[in-house]
Image 1 (tube, helix red, strand yellow):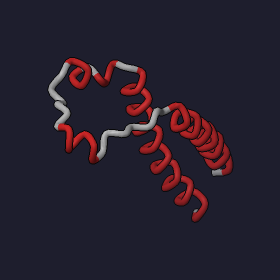
Image 2 (spheres, helix red, strand yellow; image 1 turned 45 degrees about the vertical axis):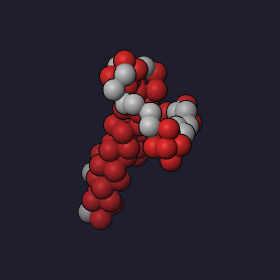
Image 3 (cartoon, helix red, strand yellow; image 1 turned 135 degrees about the horizontal axis):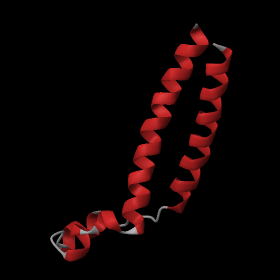
Amino acid sequence: MQIVKYVLIGIYLLNCLALVIITMMQSKEDSGASAAITGSSTNNFYEKNKGRTKEGKTKRWTIILGITFVILTIALGIVYVM
């Protein structure tokens, strides 16, 4: 059981490091109330292909790494109780 614990800790540390780096690479989105007032349309070419841009990819990887972080946290909690 010790080997599983050390492997999970290693994967957890790599995931945390990658999550911090990817989060810091993201750009700030300022489309709050001003976009609602000006009536910006979300039905344009950029919005349809946003997932293919660098911002879309970093957002997707942030979500994936965040979910992996939660799963690894639960797994480590279970392993440490045993």
